[in-house]
Image 1 (cartoon, rainbow, N blue to C red):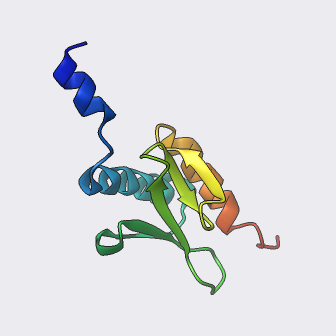
Image 2: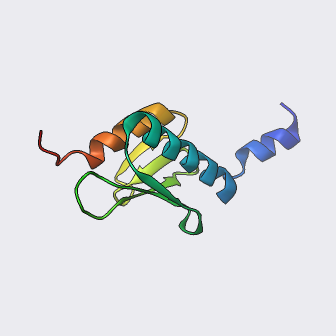
Length: 99
């Protein structure tokens, strides 16, 4: 690989890249999991809401741009698996829901 491209690949993600990843996650949550999520560009995060009135889950891109993280970075999922991240987050926000 070209030296310049190798250097670019090693640079951390820009906020714009992180916001695009969060936007893709938001769309997947809304379309396939039917979970309401609100992109907050000024905070560089996604707020994911559960079915019950409660505080939203604050999701951000962390660990050098490799993971979606939430619950004070104790929970995470790889950013290259949008579908899996949406399923994991949907299960997380619906965890206290009773059938």
